[in-house]
Length: 378
Length: 251
Image (cartoon, chains in turn green, cyan):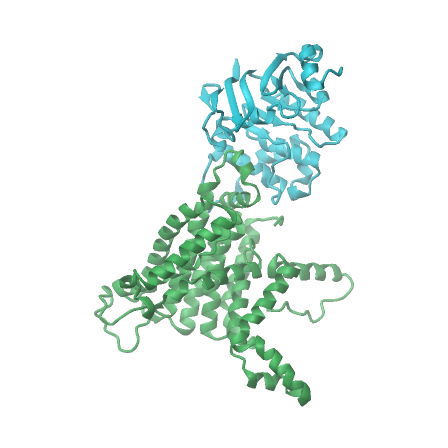
C-alpha cells in the first residue's frame, strides 16, 4: 500500500476498470461466463464486496452481519416498486436510505465493542433481522413466500400504463433484464467504485486505516475513532443496500434467506479471497465465487465422464467419483479448498498473487522476451 | 506561570495505594523530570494527565482546564501530546502518512468527514508533515512503512507526530527506554533541539544520564509521594533521594 498515488494514475486506473467491466460480455464469453444472469451477479456482488471492504479492509472491523443490509435494501426496493412504480432509480435511492438508517442503528450499538465481540454483535443483529423477517414482520416482508410486486399494488407513477406479462423493473421503457439489466448494474458498480476509490485516497480513508493500525495512538492524536468507524459502517451498509436493490431490480423478488448468515459469510469470503484492503480485490473475489457457484455447480457425472474420457476405464471410474465430490452439489468443497489454499499461501488474496506474478515478470523481463504470457487464472 | 498543576492526587488499585497525595507544578517552558524507583507511581501519575486513569481524589489542571474525566482525544485537542514507553505509531502506514494524520487532527479537529477530498492534493498538510520529517531527519524515508523502522527511528517518528501538532505540553514516558547508547544520545539531542521551541515537557525517566542532561527541574517520586523536588544538581546530593531511589548507593 505504499504505491504512489496521483489523480492522473487513478483516472487511468478507473478508465481501464470501466472498460473492462463494460466489455465483460465479450471477454468472459470464452470461459462460459458471458451470459447476462451471471454478469449481473458479478456486478452486484462486486458492489456488495466493495462496500464491505470499505469497512473491513480499511478499518479492520469484521462485520458478520452485512447480509442484513442486503436484505433491507431488497425489501425497500420491492416496496418502492409496489408504491411508486417499476422505475429502478427510486428503488435504488430508497434502498440506500433505509439500509443507511438501519446501519446507523446497528453500527451505533455494535461499534461499542471491537474485535470478535463486534463480529458477534453484527451476526446477532443479522440473525435477528432474518428471523423477524420470517415471523413478526410478515406484513412487511411477506414471510416465507417472499415479497413481490403484485398487479393490485398502487404503483403511483405507472399504474395507468397497464402492462401484460410479468412485472419487470424498467428504466424509462428499458426493461431491466438480460444485458440491459447487466449494464444498469455495471454503471451502478462503476459509480460506486469511483466513490470507493475517492474514499481510499481521501483524508477520511487514511483515518480509517489509522483505526485499523493503532486506535490508541489515534486517541492520543486528538482523533475520535468512533465517528470514523460509524461512518465507515454506514457507508458500507449503504453499499450493501444498493446491492440488495440491484438484486431486486434485475428480479423483483425479495426473500428473507438473503439475510441469512451464510450470505454474510459469503461476502467475507469474497473480500478475503480477493484481497481485503485493496480496491479491486473484493470485486475479483466476488466474481470468482459467483463464477464457481455457477460453473462448478452445473457440472454433473456426465460432464465429468466426458472430461476424463481419455483415461483408461479402470482409472476413469475412481477419478470421476472423486472429482464428482467437488462439483455439482459439492461445489462448496472446491470453494473451501481454494479458500484454504489462498489464505495459507497468499494471505493478501488474489491481489497479492497478481502482484507477485507481476514482480516475477518484471524481474525476468531482462532475460526473456514477453512470450505468450500465461494470463493469471480467472 | 504554571502550565500543569497537580494537587492532592490519590489513586488506589484495590488495596495498593499507587499515588498518595501528589502535588506537582510544572512551569511553562521548562523540562520537568519525574524520577523514582520501579513502582513509585510515575506511569500512574502520567496516565492521570492524559485521561487514561481517573484519580480517586485531587485535581489536575492544565492552564484553566481540568483534565480529570476528559477523554484522551479531548486532552490532546487541548494541547497535550504524549510519547509512549514503546513508540505508538501507525505501523502499517508510511512515515509521511503517520505525520499527516496528526497534522490533520490539529487542523480539522477530532472528526472530519472529508471522504471526497484527495489527500495528495492537500499541499498544506503535505508540506507541514514533510517539514516535520525533515526536522527529525526522517525525510528520505518518508515512503517507508513505519513498522520497518529501527527502535530509535520509531521514537523519532513518534516525536515528530507529537511535535507537528505544536503541543503546549509534551509528556514523555521513558523516551529512551530500550535504546542503544547511540540512539539515546540522538534522542537527547533531538529533545534538546525541540527545547528551543519553548514546548513544556514532562519527562519520566530511569536513565540518570538523560535526566541530568535535559531537565530544568526534577521531582522524585517514591511510594506514590513526591519526596523531593529541585534542580538536578540539588537532587543529586539529596540523601533522601539516594536512599529511596538508589538504596543508598552514590551517583
